[in-house]
Image 1 (cartoon, rainbow, N blue to C red):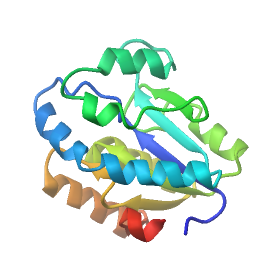
Image 2 (tube, rainbow, N blue to C red; image 1 turned 60 degrees about the horizontal axis):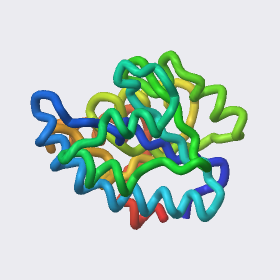
Image 3 (cartoon, rainbow, N blue to C red; image 1 turned 90 degrees about the vertical axis):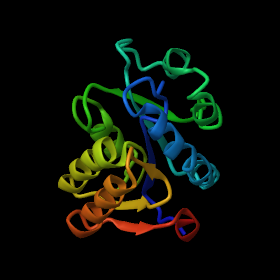
Amino acid sequence: MIPNETALLIIDIMNPFDFEHGNILARHTSKIVEPINTLRHYCTKHQHPVIYINDHYELWKADYKEIYQKCHNDVSDSIMTPLQPTDKDFFLIKPKHSAFYGTALNTLLHHLSVKNLIITGIAGNICVLFTANDAYMREFNLIVPNNAIASVSDEDNHYALTMMKNVLKAKINSTDEIV
């Protein structure tokens, strides 16, 4: 059961995967769509905030519909379409790896009285890990579903989960154990 004062973060799920190793990351990301959706539906049903934080893809607009259009292609469709934000969700853009850097995320979380974060998305060893680090430094309690983050390599993903558990004191569980 997810404690009160918890928000779900979904990081960089809108992505065109049009870079070196993008097809590999897309393949790994396709495995986390269902677990993220399970968390998203649970959080929505139990009135936990759902917050998408995404790269801006040079649009510099916090408009998830425009970013969806920019990133949508044959590779990204099966990932992005089932995980599209709704008008009830929060949506922020970020300029760099961490969801906290240069964004209003910290202010939003305090406004929502959030103390616990469930962190999901891609890439586990980059944007998810950097976000978890910044959240830990801001004294949020961390929950990272091990089946709801993806990286280009399984080894990098495992390393990121190990770092989040051992250094950032994150609770690492499967989605089923969390909900």
